[in-house]
Amino acid sequence: MDAKSPPIADPHAFLAAQVRWRPIEIAFWLATLLPFVLSPSYLVLASHVAIAALFALSLDLILGYAGIISLGHAAFFGFGAYTAGILAKAGWGEPLSGLAGGACAALLLGYVTSFIVTRVSHLSLIMVTLGICLLFYEGANRMGWLTGGDDGLQGVVMWPLLGRFDFDLYGYVAYAYALVALFVSFLAVRRLIHSPFGLSLRGIRENVRRMPAIGAPTRRRLRTAYTISAGFAGLAGALLAQTSQFVALEVLSFQRSAEILVMLVLGGAGRLYGGLVGAIIFMVARDQLADMNPQYWYFWLGLLLITVVMFLPNGILGGLAQLLARWRAS
Amino acid sequence: MIAHFIGVLFDGFAYGMLLFVLSVGLSVTLGMMNFINLAHGSFAMIGGYTAVTLMQAAGVPFLLTLPAAFLIAAAASVVLERALYRRLYRATDLDQSLLTIGIVFVSIAVAAWLFGTTQQPVELPSYLRGYVTLAGIDLGVYRLFLVAVALIITLALVAGLEYTRFGAQVRAAVDNQRMARGLGINVDGVFALTFALGSGLAGLGGALAIEMVGLDPSFAFKFLVFVLIVVSLGGLASIRGTFAAATLLGVIDVASKYYAPQLGAFVIYLVMIAVLMWRPAGLFARR
Image (cartoon, rainbow over all chains, first blue to last red; front, side, top):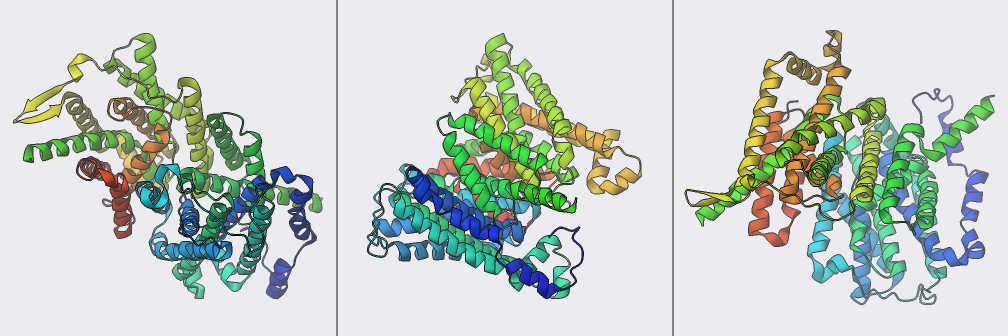
């Protein structure tokens, strides 16, 4: 909600209008099925996009709605990925329970670290989130016997999904699996955002001092949001480990945290679909530019960041919404 | 054994002094404008590449490249401040972080394009190489030089802040920006000058760092982490705090690399998180 928005006359109608499914949303989700028919050769990329979208969605929960800036969200993504990967390597390759395991491990880690994160703000907050992520990166790097260290975790073997569908080379099963996980998570996050809990998060984002005055326990709310967000990030990481049957050390890197931040901000933070749209644009652009030297890719990435901050403060979706509002007003 | 331990302490102290020169500018500018500048490491990298280029292409002696590194980094920071930073002084933490991360990425790409991704060699003059032995302890001449430079800078900064008119304006702007504006101090101008000075010091630090830690395009990010740790531990806008935090970090880092190499950078990150848990505003916070 903008600070400029007028006072709401009928809160019940306002809440009901927010929860209602709009036609464009249904069209969006139907469009996610298109890769199956239009571009079967890009299904692996499509599954990566779905995973990135889920990761961005988890970050949106704390950054867009609760206002917690994290430069180390990859810690949970990587923790989920390694948990699922190590489970499969140790001989338990059942996908769904592995997925739940990765998510639960990240959830637990999120709960523990939430006590640290909600204590600090401003620069200290950025440093603590970054520090936790760096700590895990160093840890995974040093514990080569468990994680494979720099070479990545190899020998991850997944059993067929639901005992029937094998993960194929073309990514049919992988994309379907990732898409279903994304959609279910999206429904959960959407429900959460429009609940009184979600509203109180937005209240905290807008004014952290005033919320306790109306009886909202801000710290506890932020801790809950952080924990849930960590769980979804772990889910995304576990998906990546299972569909690619490999875990690179890079899942814990600062670059991954920064990239997911870029995707979210590019699409528009605090808009539910921002992370999804940002992930699609970002991942497709990177795939198209992948032939170029990775150094040059960083140049464009940096330029993109600067441009978004200077000219598109609310991301692509924010810019579109503004255009739409202007068009309606005229 | 004891001699070895003292040698490690000295190395750590010298490393800490390097970190101090790299981070003191960020501490002051952050304290004044609350602007989260994650591109501070990029200015250090500019200084480093300036020194290397001058030495290799023009044969300028090492000592003369140091002021050049200071000037070029300061000039680059003025350009960026005028063009980009000043529009975001009142923006959110997130926007500031994103803009400056973007600058870091661009600077890494440009450095890789101009100079390649290999480590840059640096040729020290003979009088800065080798060791002197003092009471049975070997001390690197370059490290002694580093300590001397850092101590001179510290004294100059403290004296400048305490006894000059400009220093008083800086202190006023840090303590209470609105009041300072009300008294007719041109806070934006003071800030721009402080920012240039701080970035120049980072550039100097970058040139001094090559001999000890090398220089490649990832420098901008690698040192950013260390610099941010120093700043967040030392507390904002505190020269004393930055000095103490840099020394502490330098000694812990070097000592843990000597005595527990398998832990790597683990110790540093743990110490940082623990200290921020204990005192979220830093060890020596003014506020």
